[in-house]
Length: 499
Ligand code: GLU
Image (cartoon, rainbow, N blue to C red):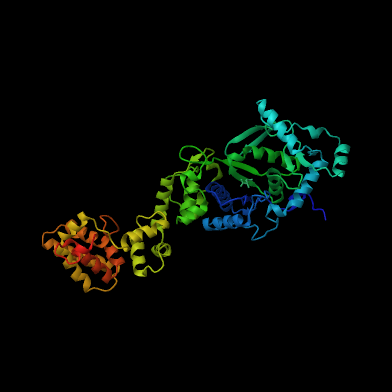
């Protein structure tokens, strides 16, 4: 059965409710740029109490893969960007994969052919390639020379009946297209820049612009927020919608994300996909916060949870200019979000990143130690290893430990009679007593604590010492102190055995 042209679907009364769409192409992971576009659409819809549609733009069959679709959905969910209609949830205007909507595009193309807005093109790829080469050599922008627009419908019909392969081209009207952009005002695109583009390839697959225009109309999309790299596409889509007698959505083209040198954000500058940031252990709300602030002018407050972003969001405040991705700023914001996290939730995330077999007491103490300094949970293993792995003392450290024998032995005695594992508070009390004991002997805090830190971790810096003590069980802590003292003592029997 022939499907109704897409324009007929406009009669599904979707009223004036805001309806936006995420339209990812499943040709790779979710790039932070696409995630930000999705975020703006989501914020806009949620702020307005509207509907979010997830549509998979998979007309590029050769490059689209199910695994990419799955990972994009997973990344969107991880970011907390939910949708009301989509390939998994269904909805009133599905299907939501373009590869499942081909009949609709064919019907819409037939409608455009019937109204003279489109024509069959029989030009071979060789001819088109030669034409492009010729135009390039002449210094003009390559575009179709409209040879097939001149064919009579009888001739076109004869050639089609004879089985000659034909694409369908849109007859671009010779005028300027005015895009009324919500952020930029009216932007005009000369139709001559567009050329009569293909809407349906000879194999029956719809081109991106055509599929998008047909679907935006059929799905009742009211607002399209996307990067300004789509401005000329918008001009094409507006012309198509006009020809299809469909209402265009309101368009808003935000600026792109650039790398710090002003180029396209690329792998060269580290992570660029949401999946990578997830792997690195960033909190989703931190990434969302950062992406929202990139080219969204806002007030004083920078640390915003998703629900605040929803409340605050106004489309008009989106900046049309490009913004540079600043990893340092992301890390700062991410750290602020870690600081605000409920300590239990933080400890759970921290422990999940540690090697299997890490004692839970150690994980808990280190998690508490790390909360004031962490930006992403991928830092957890190194943070923990610096305390849990056997210390390597250099000569200077050994000398310092050697000069602090009396106090370290005192500390060891106190530790020996305490519990196997100390809560950080108990460790703090033990250290306070140690300092009091030392102060009575005229020993500064530094002379008490630095040799202890070196004996326990082999490092001059690290988490606060009570966390270190809480992260090491009694036997380990005592072994480390004894071992360091053994190395420092020239008469130690073990000394010669060590390198
Ligand atoms: N699939 C397109 C992209 O990922 C969608 C662009 C759009 O129409 O918003 O760039």
